Image (cartoon, rainbow, N blue to C red; front, side, top):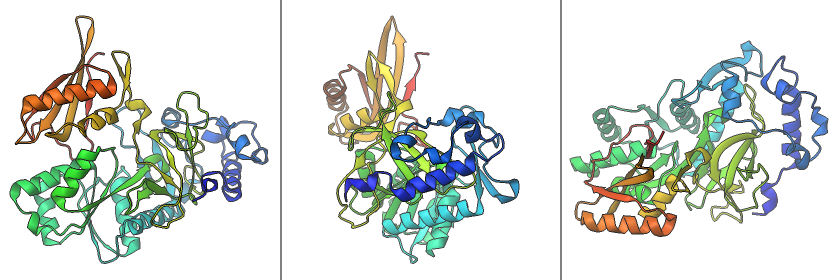
Length: 416
């Protein structure tokens, strides 16, 4: 694929102008205030577009509850809210067209993963204000597959329904997929499970975790991407070749910027993903900083799809912590773990400040046959070599670290 596919097209530019024109007419609207004095026809090129200010989650929180709404009340058919547990929630209104567009995108995701109307989708993400469960279901129904809307929790019932209804696709966070995989292995009922694929999203996950889930469930795994502010999950999806995620450039314009300067990152370099919605009605977003770190992937995908690609999400700018003067992301720990024989995928990091020094303790689960002391030595050496930090390694038994039905918390900073 030519790099031109990643550049702003004339059609995208026209859709953006149309969005801005509409937003500027919303009385006391979020963007009408943010872009005061701007005329849509002033946006004649991508260079003009890049002069527009970014928006971020803090801006959206200040618009609580319905300051982002860009259509009359009678056009709003649903609201969703961000899943974050801290701060003021972000409320996103949806029109009927928004809901239909989201289902179309989700159906496209399933098709990209080779899921067909003959499949039975076991949907474990939450329903309600969170966007995940209902998005997975709407796309499934539009595809014509069987939706099994379980939601999270009640692992006994999950497994019973998975067996009795012969679910073929598991939709889950990586944390809950691992919990289910471990429970199925522990009960020795893998031969009763009919899963063939897993659609995993909502949190980043390392290679070891991916391999464990795939091996224990006997499935092909696919990454799905999305965020509540931009419909929800379903705006990007990996294909069978596992070389990044295709995203739907007929609905979105993606930028990748240097998170420090806000300037465009060089093509192929890691930076922060910025999203502009092209057709969203209820609460459009212009130059929204996601804080997700990724990069554009050039060239033709072996699958033949012409939708452009980004890499899987490598982390978040707000996941970064500084320890002993070194900037650290969870991905750094996962990279080190890949090279530690006997280490499992599950880890936790505790950071404390004692006697004037930062102390970083890394807990990791060791495989049953592994020598814990050897795992600790290897982990300490790999982290020192890769990150430049001396840590206190602690190997624990399998299953000793907590599991989650939603997202796992990996790093605990106790210094503040």
